[in-house]
Image (cartoon, rainbow, N blue to C red):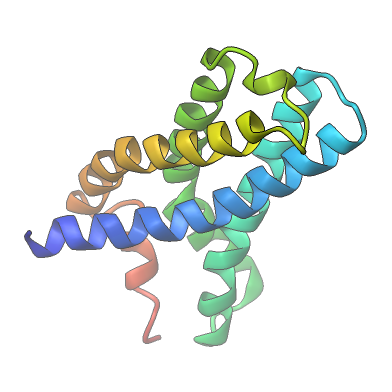
Length: 147
């Protein structure tokens, strides 16, 4: 495996972490509150972006970069990756029969969430690889890690 692919996998794992935190929290909150599917998906996506960006902004800020610039770096680094991950994940959840209507205590709820995030990871690695190869996406963050 070459360095570009390893970097893309690492970037996608980073994205998966933020997306998974946001997705799980969003699904748990909206399911517990009995929200309908559209609100469930909207909250989960919003939280996935929030946590994904937060995981990027934190180390960038720690390197001494001002907040406004750190936010710009996170937006440039993660937007396409998070959007891809969320598209693939939520499409999978919508396509799995009963997944969107499963309750928190249902095995289907957790199995479909884990399964679609795993599939989204596999499908997002090539997206990140393509972006990094062009100096975009997660490559933007690496320019600032040792500021």
